[in-house]
Length: 138
Image 1: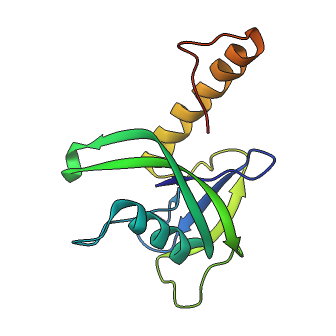
Image 2 (image 1 turned 90 degrees about the vertical axis):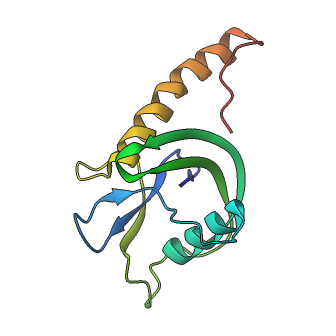
Image 3 (image 1 turned 90 degrees about the horizontal axis):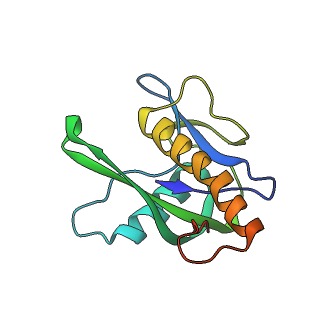
């Protein structure tokens, strides 16, 4: 999954078109033999129309009930335009959001709360000039 913020610190979310129609962070599955970063770039482009540069790993969610893990990476849009592609059947809507919609996926809820909890701690550390154990946000 990709954590992409706009200049106002709104986060890019996609709304699924099937199942529970959750809002979630862009991303998807890695194909057999596909590199992880290449897969994330592909999925983000397919779902949002944006080309992105992938940054550091921000979080890991152990999804035992699905025999999977979900990884969250920082990402920055480098080109493209925000839109749902006509042939895209998985995603219904794409937008930057200031708050997490009520109907969000479990993974989006987990990463949203984890990332938002870090923001005040990082800001406080920067304001006090702390080094060392300060939380680094990309």
